[in-house]
Image (cartoon, rainbow, N blue to C red; front, side, top):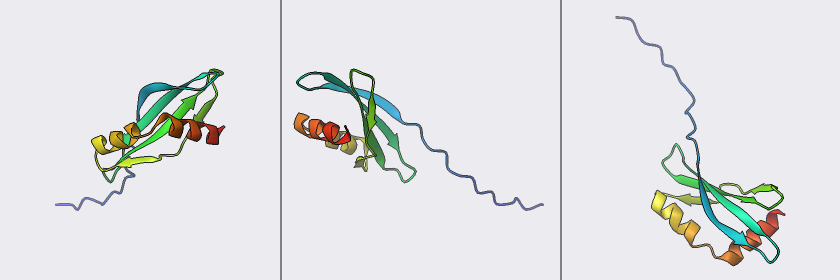
Length: 93
């Protein structure tokens, strides 16, 4: 019986799923919001926001959301108020 060599393979990153969120209404424009959600190798759920303005400029955040479960992640996303989203968008502009 021959020994099988140990082969270390890099873990395949899980593809993110993009969810459309209600648009962010600013005084002079509507900004499209998308949430990119993925499950990390350690089992945690992580997500980042994408803002797309009417001129198709894209602004992404880092993975600022994290939850031990998908429900916990969505709870933190749903806890954001419009003024938080506005401030975050303006900080990326």
